[in-house]
Image 1 (tube, rainbow, N blue to C red):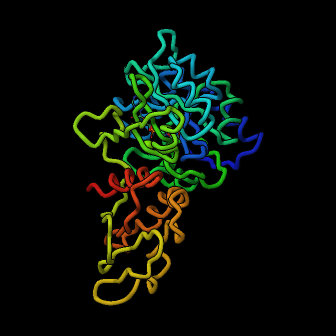
Image 2 (image 1 turned 90 degrees about the vertical axis):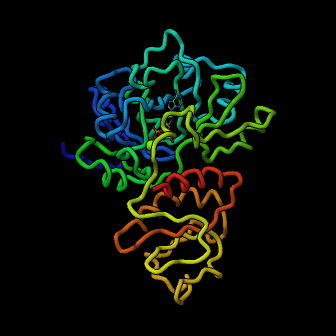
Length: 329
Ligand code: TXA
Ligand code: MG
């Protein structure tokens, strides 16, 4: 199939909505990363997502809806889940909820689990698309399984060329990291994937300290966290205090003290080999730049990517989560 990239407007959104209603795939922008959408009620449509991404069937998908009321049609929300919905929806938060008996989502979406993952996105185009097709949309990140998530239409097309009919384009994703996934199916909230809504943000609303279980052990609660993820094609080296010959530098904050082995300073490197997530040291800015810069530095010209230390606080938790997975060979 030929992939067509359409600038998002009322007409192209309607065209993509009609395509989704026919059971086909559409890639669309959200405030986190671009998603690969399908009708979440149709197993034949959802099966196409797994096929296009090469995604293992045991890894469940997030369903995107317009309101918390719609979310309640699929999952059971307790008082705490409602508080989170009130504070963070629409926005980059996914809740894992006990699956309602009457939930009519395809079993492929939930990979046969007793829980559902639901998100209410804030991005205008994502919302217009869901509204125009009148369907809940199952949507993982719009990349081949294991690759870095796409934060632009160009990234989607580089990864899924000919595997998706339409890509709705609307500029770079603002948050730049996948949504925070919080498990609300147990007694206490538990973060399964850190994101730009931080543990502190969620703790402040719930009134107790919410822990992060990022799945870096043998029995992760989120099947996706088991997998090698977010991996560039060349080695990634974390907490670098110098630059080896041939390496690119992914900087954070000042590069004043970063030297190249054998002589030279980071400041002397060509711009295509040295990128700064945030010269000012702003973690939100760093999050929004992370995937695009990892992609840009990931060329055979470099032997690897040296990444400077990122403080492990707030959004830094989420950035370091993705970097640890990128560095895992
Ligand atoms: O920001 C995002 O969340 C993007 C945009 C497109 O919305 N989507 C996204 O989807 O990142 P995906 O499929 O790449 O990641 C979904 C994660 C996976 O780690 C999956 O295992 C987990 O959510 N997940 C889905 N359903 C789950 C469930 N019932 N229980 C535990 N984890 C679940
Ligand atoms: Mg993904």
